[in-house]
Length: 217
Image 1 (cartoon, helix red, strand yellow):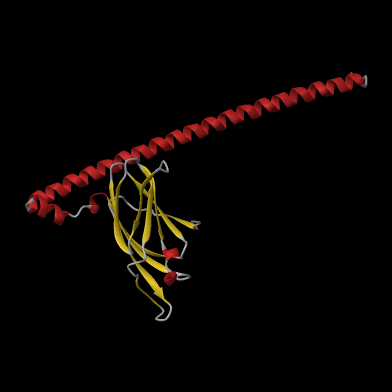
Image 2: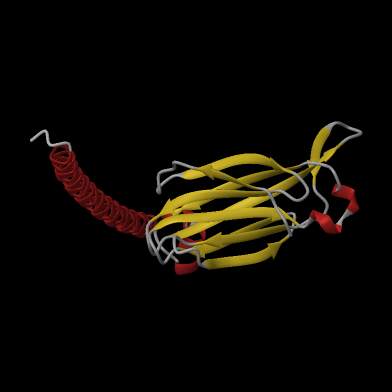
């Protein structure tokens, strides 16, 4: 299916929660880029609203209307590709640090109800330890309030360490790119200098032969 993809770069801290809504057409795809450290869990919750032309407002979408979610890692490898309902939740864990692309589009081509209309999608993305439901964890593992707090602190420290490792990884890549660029600029300057010297020598020899032919020297 041909789809017009809109790419939005979200500058979001890893230990925060991103909530937004956007509109998509029948065959339109929306993609978001998240910079994520490795081994980090991401949870996305969404719900859809369909525009009612008669009431001129957005109403909850029907159950038959679904959303297709696809996630690619920095190596352009698909790590999640699945069809969901009009309201749902998707989860994935990053294994490679870097920019992850999260794309959503509807399966509205199957439903004439949505033909030519607009769909509003509310999206909530939780990254890192914010993706954990500590109330469920405490109930499941029967943790006291102190134990739960200690676990939260441990996971926060672990997430901070992952973020620091990712920042070092980015700095290393930037340094390599800078060194590579500087080296290319240096070699290009050397090549330009050699070309200019060669042209100068050729011009001098050409002028010398010209003057000799005219018997001026």
